[in-house]
Length: 218
Image 1: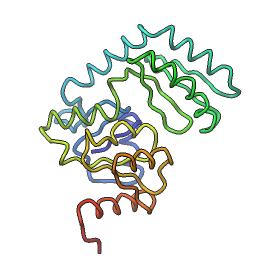
Image 2: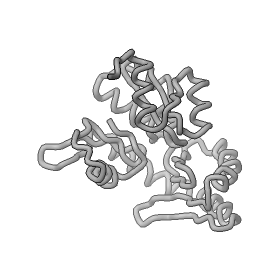
Image 3: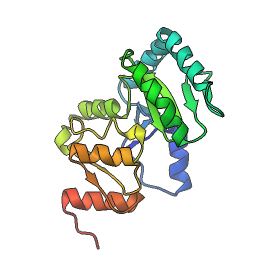
Image 4: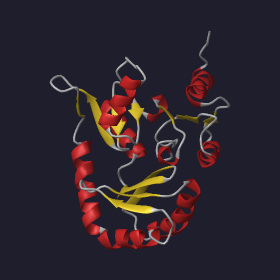
């Protein structure tokens, strides 16, 4: 299963671009939308989760307009940072660089303590706001619930801020990151008793699988 911040169409285009011909059993796109291969369509919603996620997001944007305006004013104090409000209700921030985004998050994280329904997905200098109940972690937990798979049989791996919600021992027994993961992700894994690989990217994931499942690699 692929769990990504990219849209479904972007994910499928990426698989095609890199000539990955093995079709995933499931894709979680946009950090929370659950899809599986369909009969009449190439991919289709799995269960009612996507409908609930979209409804929650629409309500979130409507209810927290004042908070989002506060964020917008905060972002506009930073040089080259941009606050985005898309036609489909997407709300996000693009910072000049990763360091600037981290600086902005210090204030935003303090505000979130008073806004339990507000969450965000961050990847480097990009951030997208959403209802806090819908993330990579909650979507993975929901997929496991629908399939009847307990956490003892789940392996999850990631390398960026938006992966933190699924790198949780309450959701997945086996959690890992590659050697090129961000330092906050590595620290999170160590605190959770997860595995931090030495090798980078896919080689790091092979290292993690060997570590957890004692596989033999030729």
